[in-house]
Image (cartoon, rainbow, N blue to C red; front, side, top):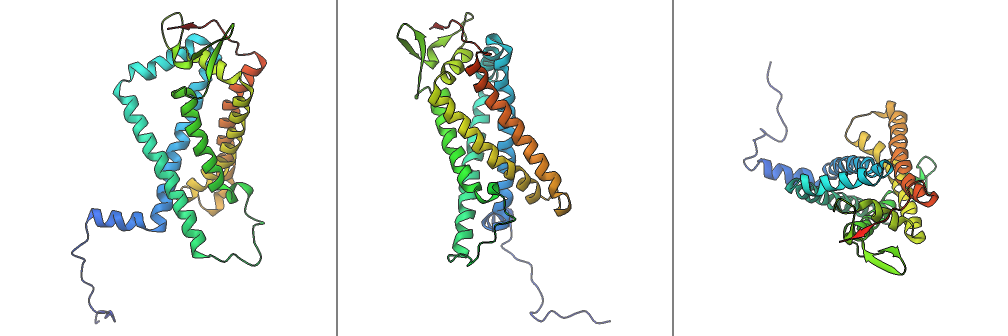
Length: 261
């Protein structure tokens, strides 16, 4: 039996193929970029979840959250900065690739459909890029507020206001407990945080399911399961983060006397 003949001739192996060119080609493709968005998104979801768990130590009292913050800042040493650098890279890559894919999608069809068929598309899926941008801007505000203390000062009473970074507890540690209470006792800051958590919930409620489907972890048959899981995880994050704000509003997490270093 004669071998099949390729009409284009014998295929010759590429002499320029190497890991670098393959990576450039793959990452330059739409499929590759979607997978990267999914992978970076999964990493960010993991961070948000663990960040929320750590913040819930507010309910364990002043010593609990301050000890946790001190551990992250001092005991981990250089590891915490490596983690922060990696997280920043993932965050920026996720946003840039998502915007690039959105622009490419819009550019592929500059003239929209005569009849928009969005009946099957949820609000979360249609607004992913917008809720993502809002969450990104809020993240910058969150860093300016609690990490760098550029936005607001703590009110110690009698008209005395100090920078968040100057608050200390009786053990000389940074008083994260008093910092958070001072922040969320300010109405406009609390409202802004609650709205941002709502946007995060909407974003994750579709984003988590999309990650599972893009990475091939669930098929079309199990898409309802993926949606349920996405709603569950995003709901837990929303409840956990908003519970801290509401507990401070209602006095369940009460202010304590804070010292200034």
